[in-house]
Amino acid sequence: MPPMPFRDRLLLLWGIPIGSLLVLLPRGLLQVRSVPEFLAAWAVSLSFTTVFWLSGRALWAILFRRFPGMHQTRQRLWLLASINTTTTAVVTVVLLSISARLRGIHLPVSVWVTEFGLNMVPTIIVQLIYESWNYFRQWADNVRRAEQLQSASTRSQLEALQSQLDPHFLFNSLNTLSALIEPDNEPAQDFVEQLSDVYRYVLLARDQPTVPLSEELAFVETYLALHKARFRDNLRVRWQVPAAAHAARVAPLSVQLLVENALKHNVTSREHPLELELSADPVTGYFTVRNTLRPRTAGLAPGTGTGLRNVRHRYELLQAPQPVAVTQEAGWFQVQLPLLVPDEKRQLHASP
Image (cartoon, rainbow, N blue to C red; front, top):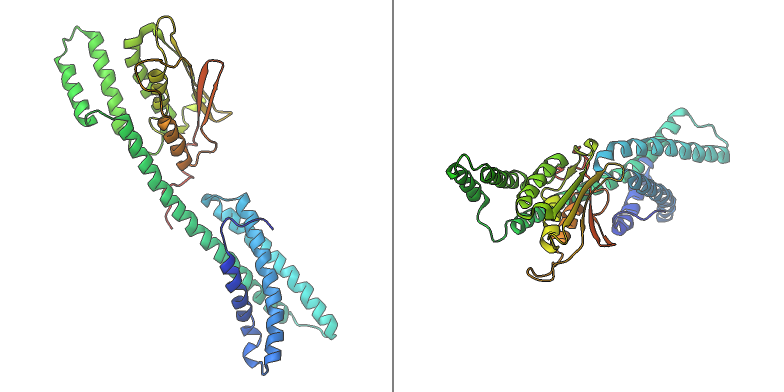
């Protein structure tokens, strides 16, 4: 029997004995006149209830592992109903046939139908108990995951804007600065507009659990343009993102954080230009940020890995289909972010 996705020991200890008593009621439990007769009837009922309960429990566990998602509940329930109905019908026919042959009698159709209905009662109750238990457990997990995701997103925003003024104030100030720059100073105008675009994206994306990859890359492209104004040819960027990947979703500011880490912790000079590669592969389901690894020996303190840990945690909360992968080899540092499906079937904010 496959292990259950949650503990149900108390449910088994109490549910099976109580259920075996309940199914005796329509079979004449109140007409039993002696204790031995009651105990014998209860023992038989307890045996059949145990078999029906444990077999239904095992079937539910198997189908739950095959169809675990909340959006797969309907498919799981249809399979449970069809298999349980067929199994109960077969068991009823076999047991009644044996009983009728041993007693040498012919049972009317009404008896067969009645016994089938009575045998279905514990089976249906068992499935309803486990499905209800699992549904509310998943709902509670989703609520907790949504809260954790919001908390992680807030921490990411605070870290991204650490030691800076309120982004609304900066955004408005940049617009004012743009108006003060001489019209013929196009490089300065372009720089201020790009900086405004960066903060506009931060303001729009910070409250969203995911954003389209195309929007994140447009933001990263603007972010890199600001750094190109500083590093010029010392920063070399290569893009390999097919159009098929643009509809996928990523955690907001996650690609930017990886690019920022590459710029912050590696040498970027004429002798050692920073090579930065950004690519997406819809087949493997990953977006990759890859950069040459030449750690700075002076200036900033060495990285603590907090940013990467937060990125990993955010993708775990988003129930990414595969984990964030980090590798380091042959002078290159690489981080792969799982591409998230664009549909809303994951239902982070599901309600009962």
